Image 1: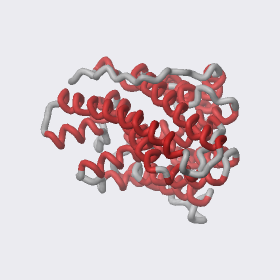
Image 2: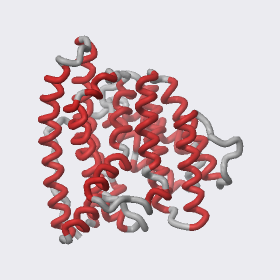
Image 3: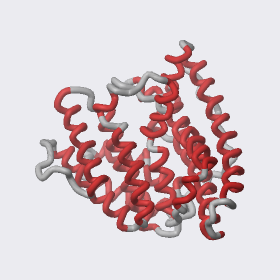
Length: 326
């Protein structure tokens, strides 16, 4: 179909030294989840290994308990994503919408909005139960300011991943691109880097305009590799959500030309990330925060670099995407 470009980042790939422990926890959680019916399904998700993804996400984290929670969180998101792509119409479609609504209710209040949740199959009910446990575990270990931020971004992510949102996706290119950053979960993932490292950004940093620019550049660097490698899989779904498709539609070009345009945007995002990082360092001096808080900001940016490099490596090497078929 097309040739995948050789995407590179000038950041080192680091992996947590206790990946084996995380993989063991992953196996136990998946086996106990009640979501996988066969050994083949279990092996499939163990091969994908969101435990490995988590090891790239927070390679220097000190607390294995936090990383174990992230392994569960990342696996749940992967399972929900797969189920979302499989369900296309009728009762299944409506049930997944109900699951999404219940998850949003848990995010908002820690429990269902309704005394009697909508009818769901055992699978849907189990998805909601697992999410409630994970959500509780995350927020019990996090400070209130971070919990507020993560709740807001996670709700936005889930709203854009409801089946009912698919039909209302905008055709405007800029708005579609902005929503793609959100629908991929770029910003909740960055917050989970804070959580995993138990090091939280001072709230005032979000008043720094260059930090907003850096976040947007990070978002593009985060989701673009996924969209390169997942295009074949996306085209098999009824409502694909992929910027290469978006670029092809906008410019009326071939698949290869759309891929080349996306690769150029990736390089531009890297340049924007680097220039924004310098500007953030200058901005910090005027925010009135102490040196420790400034160091947390700079450390977070460094950890985002490790995450971006590790995420790129994970996507390019993962059997989930079948790069050899592109």
